Each structure stands twice: as structure tokens, then as C-alpha cells.
Image (cartoon, rainbow, N blue to C red; front, side, top):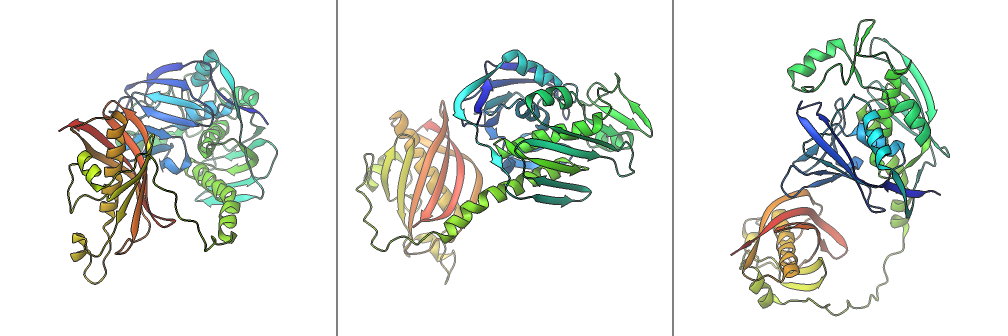
Length: 443
């Protein structure tokens, strides 16, 4: 088993964004083992990050877009393909816009800066995704099948709806074959598609410098085709980039016919379903917990009663949603809220069917996050202002008699801006979860 890899030093490239037509600066930074690949928007306040995972895919129309809350990064597949093709597991891709530079429409320029920066092995071992049984998807005209294999191989057929420029290619993807056989293949489009793309503002930075245009039987390009099968090889480049969103290197043989970003990402989701299936089965058939469960341990250092909470938070009943802090350990906090029938909100939510509003659970997460951030700085006379919430999920209703346990961990602190992940539980069941961002200000 090979070790994980990252860059030896930062790699920088500047160019034009395909969608905006504006200049974009990109820097690929080394990252620690097991951290994966993520994008960082340095042009936005707080420099928010989006992990390069299929769970964050929001759009697949002609390119792959990642999103987290209101933050997006478009056309990620070419730079991700460059990293995955070389077997780079961990990196941070900093951007000062909402998309990487389009360069020449391939991954060639990204390969050059990665080679110049150098690739180094890390102590952590690679964790491969190994397919145990075939996976098949059909999505419109796209058909893809993934078979078990000891290596990563792609066999692909590409054609448009009219059957023009039908091409076939097959290769095992290794760093050597990636660089020689796939990395230089440019994106392409058909002439009749261009008017729609221009009218909808989708290719303000598009030109023959970064794409090949097919008009009837003619190929419009500023240079000769780089491969006899350049179109299908670019489709394979996209597959390498999109499947890197699995977060781990894949072992398997892909047979693809007319692939696209939507099909690539759907195949990635099916792979994760297969990989996670044994885990779900183990959880389903695991024995129930013993009845004689020992009592919970005594509160750890950092426990606070209601009077101490009110010294840190300006909230007061009925909007103080924490009754007790059970523990604070570093960047983590565990709080408790006893949900009783006397809660004021039960009068209207709902008469005869009392349910704690989900937004109040979100507020409890934000209040707990504010406490741990204030405690981190040991600051007085300060208030945590709730700024935004992302990936909010409400899973089960909470009612009178429930004890709400709020678990929150700070994930990022920059200056007076904090970001945290929180979950609310009743017993062992997660009833809600969210990521919150807030700001500390003097009162």
C-alpha cells in the first residue's frame, strides 16, 4: 500500500475564468495527511472552505460545481483531475474568485505547476476504495458500469446525439499514463451550442484558446488536435476529476458510454453507497445496549450552571436555551436543555401537539458555540452574533419531557469570526444538526 502524497511547496497559476471572463489567481497549497482536498475562497470574508467531496456537488450542467451554503466553486474537475492523476491526496486550492482558471481547457497547465512544486510522500497510508461487485448507472444517454479491479482503469466511448465524432479509448490511469495520455486533452463543444451558452452568460471567458469547437464535420482550433481521440480522452479526464470527489483513490474498471458530469457524480454516489452498506448492516444487526448501563460520569472541568451561563450570555428566558454546560474541553462543548411542557413556545407550536421549533434547536447550537468561542479568548463583555447557518437538518421531533443534549465543536476561528459544527441529541438519536458562523463583538 502506497503512502499519501501532497505538494512539496505551493503552486500558483493565474488565468481567465470560463464563466466570468475575469482574471483568477489560484494557489495549490500542501496539506497534512488525511485532510483531503478542499477549496478555499480567499476573496470572501472568513475565507470559507468547501471540501472536494461528492456530497457538496450542487450542479453538473456542463461542469461540476461544489457548494456549501451560499459559497460556490464552479468548474472544479480539471484541477481536481490534475491532483488525482498524480495521486495527490491532500491539498488546499486557494481561489480569489468562484472558479479556477480555465487555462487551455485541459489539465496541462495545472500539471506543469504541480511538477514544478514537486510531490512528496506523507507518513499516512493511502486508503483505497475497492469495489466488491459491479455498479451500474443509466442517466439519459449516459451509461456507466464499474467493475472490480486491482487497478484504476477507464474504457470510454464518446459521441454526440447525431453520432458525430464517435471515439473510443481505454487506459489504466497511473501518474505516467495520466500525464501522457489524458492530461492534455482539451474541452470541446458543438457550434450549435455556443449561442445558448453565450446568451445565458455561461462562457464569458470561452474562446478557441481554451476549447475545441466542432462545426458540422470541421474542427475549429488554434492548433492541431493533441490526440487522435482528443474528445473521448477529455471525457476520461473529466471522469478522473469527478471521481476524485469520492475523497479516496478508487480501484475499479469503468466502462463508460457518453459520460457527463451528472453521470460521473451519480456513479460516485453509488460507490459510496456500496462501500457504506457493510457498515449500515453491521449497525442494523448489532446487539442492543445492555439494560444495566452505568451512570454517566461526573461533569468534566468546564461545567457551568445557569447563573454562570447568564454571566456570559445576554439571553434571558424564554430565549435562553441552555440550562447547563456539562463540559468544555478545548474547542468542544456539551450543553443541556430540559424541554418541559411549561416552555412558552408550546402554546402555539402546536396546540394539542407540542413540538419544539427546529429553529430554537439551531439557536441552542449557536448559543453553545458562542460560549465556547468566548471561553477560548477568556473575554468579558463580549457577545457572539449569529451570522449564518449551513447544512441544517432536522431529523426528529422534540417534545415535552425530552432532554436535549447540544454538542458543538469549533472548526475554525479567524480573528473575531468563528465557525462550528453542532448536533442536538435526545438520548442516542440525533434530532438536528448544523454548521454555524458567528462574530464576537464588544457589548
